[in-house]
Image: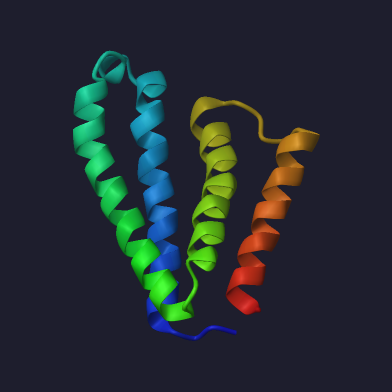
Length: 116
Protein backbone atom coordinates (compact mmCIF):
# COMPACT_ATOMS: atom_id res chain seq x y z
CA UNK A 1 0.00 0.00 0.00
CA UNK A 2 1.26 3.46 -0.86
CA UNK A 3 1.65 5.52 2.30
CA UNK A 4 3.19 8.63 0.77
CA UNK A 5 1.25 11.72 1.88
CA UNK A 6 1.86 13.36 -1.50
CA UNK A 7 0.18 10.43 -3.24
CA UNK A 8 -2.98 10.83 -1.14
CA UNK A 9 -2.94 14.60 -1.63
CA UNK A 10 -2.71 13.97 -5.38
CA UNK A 11 -5.70 11.63 -5.26
CA UNK A 12 -7.68 14.19 -3.26
CA UNK A 13 -6.81 16.90 -5.79
CA UNK A 14 -8.04 14.68 -8.64
CA UNK A 15 -11.38 14.37 -6.87
CA UNK A 16 -11.49 18.10 -6.18
CA UNK A 17 -10.69 18.86 -9.83
CA UNK A 18 -13.46 16.52 -10.99
CA UNK A 19 -15.96 18.22 -8.66
CA UNK A 20 -15.08 21.74 -9.81
CA UNK A 21 -15.07 20.53 -13.43
CA UNK A 22 -18.54 19.06 -13.00
CA UNK A 23 -19.82 22.42 -11.79
CA UNK A 24 -18.03 24.26 -14.60
CA UNK A 25 -19.93 22.23 -17.18
CA UNK A 26 -23.24 21.78 -15.41
CA UNK A 27 -24.04 25.03 -13.61
CA UNK A 28 -25.74 26.05 -16.86
CA UNK A 29 -28.37 23.42 -16.03
CA UNK A 30 -28.55 24.30 -12.35
CA UNK A 31 -28.98 28.05 -12.67
CA UNK A 32 -30.58 30.26 -15.26
CA UNK A 33 -27.93 32.88 -14.47
CA UNK A 34 -25.09 30.63 -15.69
CA UNK A 35 -26.89 29.48 -18.84
CA UNK A 36 -25.21 31.91 -21.26
CA UNK A 37 -21.90 32.56 -19.50
CA UNK A 38 -19.40 30.03 -20.89
CA UNK A 39 -16.45 32.43 -20.73
CA UNK A 40 -17.11 33.35 -17.12
CA UNK A 41 -17.51 29.67 -16.27
CA UNK A 42 -14.25 28.83 -18.03
CA UNK A 43 -12.32 31.55 -16.23
CA UNK A 44 -13.77 31.19 -12.73
CA UNK A 45 -13.97 27.40 -12.60
CA UNK A 46 -11.68 26.24 -15.40
CA UNK A 47 -8.53 27.74 -13.90
CA UNK A 48 -8.99 26.13 -10.46
CA UNK A 49 -9.91 22.85 -12.16
CA UNK A 50 -6.75 22.93 -14.28
CA UNK A 51 -4.59 23.79 -11.29
CA UNK A 52 -6.08 20.94 -9.24
CA UNK A 53 -5.43 18.48 -12.07
CA UNK A 54 -1.92 19.78 -12.71
CA UNK A 55 -0.86 19.39 -9.09
CA UNK A 56 -2.73 16.09 -8.73
CA UNK A 57 -0.86 14.73 -11.75
CA UNK A 58 2.50 16.01 -10.46
CA UNK A 59 2.08 14.65 -6.94
CA UNK A 60 0.68 11.31 -8.03
CA UNK A 61 3.21 10.70 -10.79
CA UNK A 62 6.19 11.76 -8.68
CA UNK A 63 5.17 9.73 -5.63
CA UNK A 64 4.55 6.55 -7.67
CA UNK A 65 7.05 7.01 -10.49
CA UNK A 66 4.30 6.42 -13.04
CA UNK A 67 2.11 8.72 -15.08
CA UNK A 68 -0.12 5.71 -15.72
CA UNK A 69 -1.19 5.76 -12.10
CA UNK A 70 -2.10 9.44 -12.40
CA UNK A 71 -4.04 8.76 -15.61
CA UNK A 72 -6.07 5.90 -14.16
CA UNK A 73 -6.88 7.69 -10.92
CA UNK A 74 -7.79 10.98 -12.63
CA UNK A 75 -10.15 9.31 -15.10
CA UNK A 76 -11.68 6.97 -12.55
CA UNK A 77 -12.31 9.81 -10.10
CA UNK A 78 -14.52 11.41 -12.73
CA UNK A 79 -16.42 8.18 -13.34
CA UNK A 80 -17.11 7.92 -9.62
CA UNK A 81 -18.12 11.53 -8.98
CA UNK A 82 -20.03 12.32 -12.17
CA UNK A 83 -22.89 9.84 -11.58
CA UNK A 84 -23.27 10.85 -7.94
CA UNK A 85 -23.28 14.61 -8.61
CA UNK A 86 -25.54 14.25 -11.64
CA UNK A 87 -28.00 12.12 -9.71
CA UNK A 88 -27.99 14.29 -6.61
CA UNK A 89 -28.00 17.73 -8.27
CA UNK A 90 -29.64 17.17 -11.67
CA UNK A 91 -31.93 14.28 -10.78
CA UNK A 92 -30.63 11.94 -13.51
CA UNK A 93 -30.55 8.41 -12.18
CA UNK A 94 -27.22 6.71 -11.81
CA UNK A 95 -28.95 3.43 -11.08
CA UNK A 96 -28.86 1.91 -14.52
CA UNK A 97 -26.99 -1.28 -15.28
CA UNK A 98 -24.53 0.47 -17.57
CA UNK A 99 -23.74 3.30 -15.15
CA UNK A 100 -23.44 1.04 -12.12
CA UNK A 101 -21.03 -1.28 -13.97
CA UNK A 102 -18.86 1.69 -14.97
CA UNK A 103 -19.05 3.10 -11.44
CA UNK A 104 -17.95 -0.24 -10.00
CA UNK A 105 -15.11 -0.64 -12.50
CA UNK A 106 -13.85 2.89 -11.77
CA UNK A 107 -13.92 2.15 -8.04
CA UNK A 108 -11.95 -1.05 -8.58
CA UNK A 109 -9.39 0.80 -10.73
CA UNK A 110 -8.79 3.32 -7.96
CA UNK A 111 -8.49 0.58 -5.35
CA UNK A 112 -5.93 -1.22 -7.52
CA UNK A 113 -3.90 1.97 -7.95
CA UNK A 114 -3.99 2.77 -4.22
CA UNK A 115 -3.41 -0.67 -2.72
CA UNK A 116 -1.30 -2.55 -5.30
